[in-house]
Length: 196
Length: 196
DNA sequence: GTCCTTTGCCTAACAATGTTAGATTTTATA
DNA sequence: TATAAAATCTAACATTGTTAGGCAAAGGAC
Image (cartoon, rainbow over all chains, first blue to last red; front, side, top):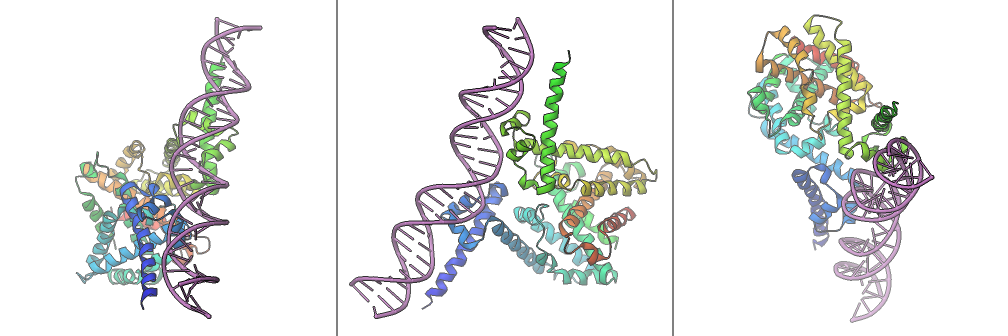
């Protein structure tokens, strides 16, 4: 009699559907339009149900951020086996972030918004891979290595955020720079990698 | 009889006091705690008064962002005459941004938040100075010059934002990197300037 | 089968927010 | 002083997050 398991599965489904509904809403109308009531309507329940699965809205948002980082790491691990050269690996990893920010723009905005501190648990994961790459490129270890990695993170997210902010349909960056946004991003990352 | 002028001045004062009240509130409790009612209370008026001076809350926020850019430019012009070497000038300008982000943290957060596109008018101002500096360092002109400047902007704001996000009293960055946040920032900017 | 407990879900309300219409008071003008 | 205009307020509206309390279905005990 798997009815208890089924019940658990149903609940997991509701939980997931809440997260999905929130992301869908954000995708089409932005995060400011994501309300508990609209989420409830989307999953065909009443608002209080959301509180059965999440302590409050902030908690829900926090979980969505965690979900975002999982997705990002997943894209990373899928894309990093193509080369063994550490410089190429670093560029590839950069481009994974870039692609993520385009495919999941609303998630990226949530994850790296200035208003919410990053969940440090998520920030730490995947650090070992980066350490390995940077060590192979520069031979550095310890804090010097951490500093280089942080430099990369700053440039990476700064570039993505800025391009997102400046890129507008009515006045695309390509017109201003004669490069696609991705080429622009690529250039900046290459300049950094070359400086290592 | 200057009573009309005085009235105009009074209104300007109210307008300014609304902006100041909003910034003060943001300083002490964060932007999410900035409400029309609290602003009204702070300036000892009732909420509808705010709407005499600003179309709505978004409009008010927008004006605060403009005000922030003005302040930033002002700090820039005060601090840039100290040297004539363009590399030093660029580092000095970077540090002006850094200092601004510390002295007016809440303004910085508003100005460069991912949710709000930058007012492009503000983004353009001060561009000539940057062009001059970068041209003197690299000899580049035209779009290549613009690309370099944008690279600098991305690194600059990315670094400031990231440091803001990661720096926490209970676990300061200095522990992790053996550098103060400002030294860290300095390093990243120097690496970039050296790559030019 | 009946009773009871648990569970799932809903209705209805609360307070806080942005915003506006209309009344009222204050000020200026004639 | 009477009237017009301007400044300001009161009171309401809809929308939000959130919670208390109730109802009804499901499951187990006898």
